[in-house]
Image 1 (cartoon, rainbow, N blue to C red):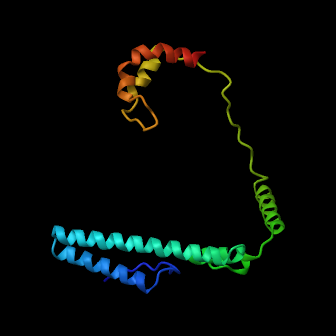
Image 2 (image 1 turned 135 degrees about the vertical axis):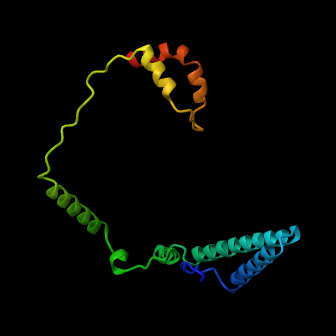
Image 3 (image 1 turned 120 degrees about the vertical axis):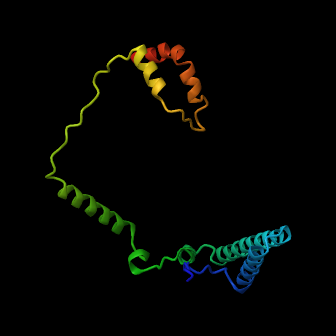
Length: 176
């Protein structure tokens, strides 16, 4: 049993696009039956042609739509919402800025009213730092995982290797 996912129809996807897709799928099936280099090249060429054709159709559609509706933002938004699969309803289509402001003001007031009886939490603050020692810094460097990210130019293994040399500077930096 095959499972098909239904996507919103793209307005530029027409019979020519379906034909290009059909040709690519036929070439893919041939490749699955006979795994040869020639079949793979044919499939890749059909796939590349299909993608290029899709891009040309998509680009042509949007250029035509934008030029035909130049200056009419309502029609442009309607076309975009249609592609996204969103229906424009009375709820979404005709709100004014004042209505939005009123809605959010009422929303904020209702949240404040519903949380007014909630007790306030005491959040501790850091008023004083405890000085760190060389041993603590060396221990923390030694316990660090050997992971780095692309933004970090110094590998962790190197920091661990020179940890005893770095620890006095780190202690000075934290205790200053």
